[in-house]
View 1 (cartoon, rainbow, N blue to C red):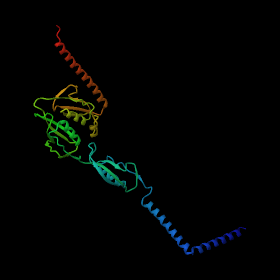
View 2: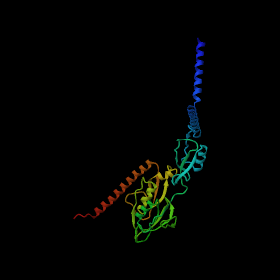
View 3: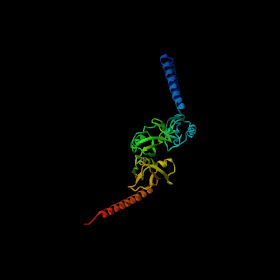
Length: 309
């Protein structure tokens, strides 16, 4: 029985093979089949080569380049088979010149070998800006123009002149500064101001809890100069100096103190918030004591003037 089944199967396969051969000999069937076979081979080969050249699945994390000097960033990128492209630069005073500020793609993102990483670096020199025309302006307007230009007010000097608090001369690093001259952004511009022909006074501002830049602006607005600047042990680097705040001044703030124009006020700065708060409380007590003393003196003067008939 099994032999009979096997013979029938062989006979059936033989007939099927002869049928396929007869169909294959027909040109209208033969040529399209060859074309389909070639198309399949080409498509399969294209997908295979694409996965080889694009390294499909061969990805790795981008290293962190932010904060590194440019030379070290290039060395790390070379070991990671990445190409660095410098996109732009800006000047940040708290960062070392030539260090990476930003990167794209970000650290940790998955990329393939040979990918471009775009960098923004800290410039070696600050950006230059045009000096504003300050001569003839009032001190208040000069401070506004300096801030708009990205500059700071430096030393204030006074000379007898009818134009009180009017800018007579502007200098930079000891040399007269002409309007439109290019100087580094953030530079200190010194001003010579008119003092009038008699001694004029101004009031001391309360600098407690101000940053160094804010204190400098507040003093300049009152026609006063920045004196000695002292940072305590909490201030470690340039970033700390910008974030530190005033906790004490010399002379101390009394609320009613009058000072000649151009007087220097020293500042002491810290990052310790409790020290700032404690000094603010002590200053309030001193101010209240000073106000009480003034009131007592005024009452004493009134008593002396009061006469009973």
